[in-house]
Image (cartoon, rainbow, N blue to C red; front, top):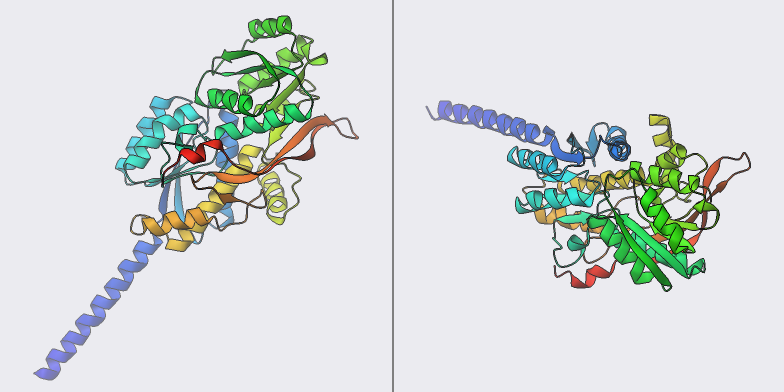
Length: 395
């Protein structure tokens, strides 16, 4: 009788062990959901496409995994409408998604961020870097992989100083990133601001603004207009004849590779501040530029470079916790902060507010030997550059 009981118990234990192993394996095999909410339509939709494609390139290179962990990237278009983005984020949070990325515009981030962070989720930004999340409203679960918005503008201010420009007009859309850009430029620029001009986010006709600039007769314009708005502004600026006598100083995001192709020769002579260029001499960057070009038959933009870095940062953190971001949130957060991944920018680290400390470069748009406009990497504008809002972050 005892023997029978022992045999039955042994069989039961073996059955339970097998069931447990199966359950564990199933749990480990279940993909981690990543909510990717980005702008994939409207004239700015190509930006979201580049970000999505670069992010998914890293996933494809991992065989459907990031850091060896299977992932399910749920891609949704916000159509540049904060209400759409919030509704999508609310639905994903209800579905149990706790890891998000993809937002390009800061006004959309203002709608998505609270939904994700209030649910205890993680937001890893591949582009938008509003000043509030870098300063007083910083959050231990919010990470900005690209920049803080002021950084692409204060480095443009440094560029204006080094170019010897004494008087500028600044122009940007009247939303969070545009206001941050103006504030950043003014903080670094040492010359005279002739006037601040604020435009609409989706504006296409800049004839009134250009007429005003003509009357002000500045030495240079600093402007921040990404996507379709920037393409229209550049063409109209060239057609107005102002480009013959006024320098244009702008972040790379106001004249990225896709914009450069769309504007023909209109952007010749532009000066750009940038955290990345395709010719940066490091192994990861060379791999990325080659892989992206082969995969999509086009050159990557800075947006794409940031998105690829974001995917690989997430991969490093998922690997550290074996995909268990809800059961091990402290470890996942610590792994993100460690930033133990190969960046296309070469060196990369986070500051105390979970925003990057990184180098910025001065680029100049000029023709190569074949007459094609290219970005010439002129010099490093700022080494180990960080944002001024970090001092207000109390984490």
